[in-house]
Length: 249
Image (cartoon, rainbow, N blue to C red; front, side):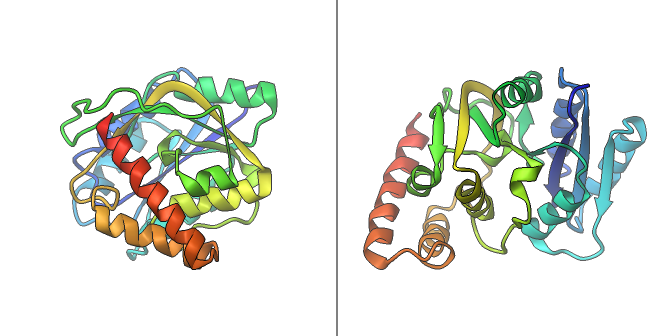
């Protein structure tokens, strides 16, 4: 029997994009999945949209939080609810291509891998593709990911047993910190250099705010990972260069 994949989608005021994201999950060729949507006390119609969708698709479940606790809290709750062998995180404005789950599960089952991720294309808020394929390396370890975060979180899939007791911290770039902690445990992640995800770039996101992103990155180096000032400065320079090159693609 095909292993169960638990998909965790945190959302907050995602009414403009959530239907397209949910449709992409239902359209997957791989069929043994559960989708846990954790709504972080949205003020728009997100909950109503997901609830109506879940009434038509029993593998979709809404967890509606009574208080806003941030994306890290929402992901931790979704992770605790997950029953699958594998965990896949999908942000509420990103879109999977139909072969995304099948390609990753097949690769991970065959090679007994703890973490995979894939190439992607960037889209804008209207869904228009605004980049060519963003490639990924064949493998990545802790030091490589520290120097350059090549993993867009919505492209990742990980073995739940490899995650263990790792939790999302309340910090900027919490997904990057989570992956760094995972690689400390499992050694390597494995890339699929095939674009299987549309990653949406939004004007008000942390990743689009360069100064804020740099500030969060510096905190990761200095506070989360405890790296000395000199090496942190070198890593931050590399981060700035790689981020600039990525936007040129």
